[in-house]
Length: 274
Ligand code: BTN
Image 1: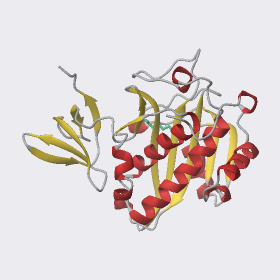
Image 2: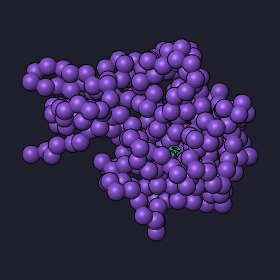
Image 3: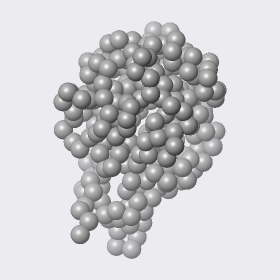
Image 4: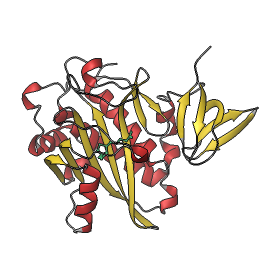
C-alpha cells in the first residue's frame, strides 16, 4: 500500500505541539481548530485529561512523550517508555446516551488503522474489540473512559501506538512496533497529527451516523473474520465459535451450532487452525 504522505522525519522526532498543529493545518480536515497539549511526562494521558476536565480547562487532545502509569484495558498496564510510543488522548462529547457508545473502541481502532496507513503505509488488522495488529501481533490499543451525564456523555479516547521499542522491554503478549515493520520509522509528530485528524473525523461520523456507517471500513480490516475463536465474556463462561464479522451496533457475531450469537464485550483468543 502506498502512504498518502511521507511521515518519516528524524529531525522532528521530538514531540512538539507547534509542529503537530502545523502538520494538522497542512493535512486539512476539520481537526485543525482543536486545542492540543503536549507534555514530556504524565502518569496517563487519559487520567490527565480527565483531571483537566474536572478543573474546567481541558484541551481536546493530550499527547505525552512518556507515561509513568499508562493504563490498558481490564486494569492492565500500558508500557509507555519515553520516546518509544505515541500516547494520545482525545476528549469528545456526544449527543447520544451512554448506552449507545459501546462501539467507541471500534471507531478509535479504525481511526488508528487509517492513520497508520496514511502516515507510513502500514496495513493493520483490527481484532475486536480494541486491538490494532500487524501480522497477528499487537501494534496499538485503545482505552475508552466515559464520564459526565448519562444522556450527554463525554468520552476520553486513549490510543497507544508502539513506535520504536528497540532496546526496551515490551508487554507480555505477542506485540510489535513500527520500527519492526516499516523503514524509516515515522516521525511521531506526523503520526500524532494524522491520528488526531482521523480520530476527529471518525468520531463525528459515529456521532452523526452511528457505527453502521463505518461497518464496511471496519470489516475490510477484520482480523478475526472466519476464524475459530474462544470468547471470554465478563464473568460469563467461555464461548467457542466462529467469528462472522460485526453487527450494526459493533457486536461480534459468533456462529455456534448453526446460530449467530451477538457478543457485546469480551476478550478473544484465537483457536489454532488445524
Ligand atoms: C489496551 O489495548 O489495553 C489499551 C491501551 C491504551 C493505551 C493508551 S496510551 C494513551 C492512553 N493513556 C493511557 O493510560 N492509556 C491509553
